[in-house]
Image (tube, rainbow, N blue to C red; front, side, top):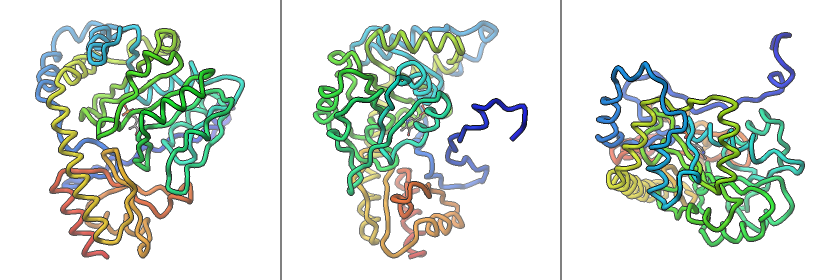
Length: 352
Ligand SMILES: *Cc1c(COP(=O)(O)O)cnc(C)c1O
């Protein structure tokens, strides 16, 4: 703390990302990265981009990338917004579309960046408790609000809502913006993207970090009604005209176009997830049903934090959240390769 800090900065509680330790031979199951590398076509596109043209600014509007995303869903480019990771896209959404007189609503257990954005942009929020089985009940959101946001599947629980439930929420919430954060939708869920054609207050966000194996490139996007997208552009162009550099644009276009590679990887992650769940359940873990590339598990006889610490001694890192206390006995484990998950199971059986 310093007397030179603004009042706002003094009040902030920043988000703490999962660690990226500099340790060799680590089995890294703590930040939901994809265990498989990006498409070879992405690597080729990046190599091509390492050229004299780097002296020139990139396209400030990322039009070719927006076109590729639009083609994927049958949307016009004025229904697409891209940013430096979906975290940046979300930040602009909070600033442009969720800051109104009434508090916004999100679950009590959810992506912990949401309250951080509320702090930064001075947005009031109310949390809505998940059910005892950690599910979102859409009826709980049928009331006046300044906006609604949650991930589907939810994080860090992995629980998935059906499209029918999302649509029911939209039908009861036409007066404010509803944001569905589909960071993990590629691992078996049904996307709400097509609903943006019917609901002018719906925004759906995606990231290339998880399903498309590009956490290091920092690209995310939102799709929605042109008026919502226009609001995001107004904020973006009041903040940074060039959030996506030349590499990010070229790599993301190649990734979006190589649908076959991406689907094959996601299918493999889903298969490994099912194996991991079965093995953990055999060892006495209770695992929440997951529609994501991670699972959320608890063991009635072992303390979650101590388990995470023991695994660390074997160079396996997973994520433990101390707060809220309702999840303090749960562990979030990213689905790695089959080999990584076998190592995890072997080490766990020696610990238990
Ligand atoms: C990972 C994640 C994001 C952010 O993704 P980036 O595109 O890497 O910034 C957004 N929302 C949720 C729920 C996530 O888990």
